[in-house]
Image 1: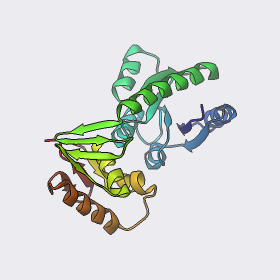
Image 2 (image 1 turned 135 degrees about the vertical axis):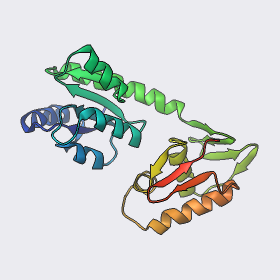
Image 3 (image 1 turned 90 degrees about the vertical axis):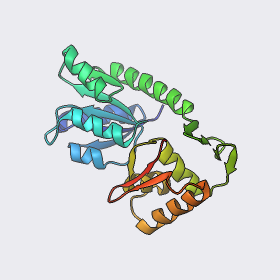
Length: 220
């Protein structure tokens, strides 16, 4: 199982050792020494998140990463071993909590378990329902009530990106990344696709503009 891992660890010695061990097991490693680097990182399959970071509390980072991507797997890594700390990590959005020191055998087993759970969750997300809107992600088909709506490829991808976080504001940069795989590009391009999507859904208020931030798919 090859996993793209965001390794958030400020201790250079620990980060180097973990990176080497993960790559030997066939994983791709994206390093981040600070919370700021972790938040700016490109999408990954799994985050290994040290909770003791120099620029921000790790629990806050965990909550922000979960808000940005509700499907990414997160394993909190910390020397804090009390039950309270483990519960706080899980409540912040981590899928698992590993106490330092740990063996690579244990960490790899936890990675495999978390990725299996994430894969099962992703399969259940193949059918999305938001109010009268129904989306079959695998078949790339959309219905509003009983009426099927024909969407262009990018319009469909945009709708899915919004529907996966229905009711929440999805930042413009996140939509650019999800739909066009880059944060570079014309802001006008996104606006044009949103306008086209609104027209085809025949409900201009379904996709709401949050000025200066992004867009939100209305849930009611």
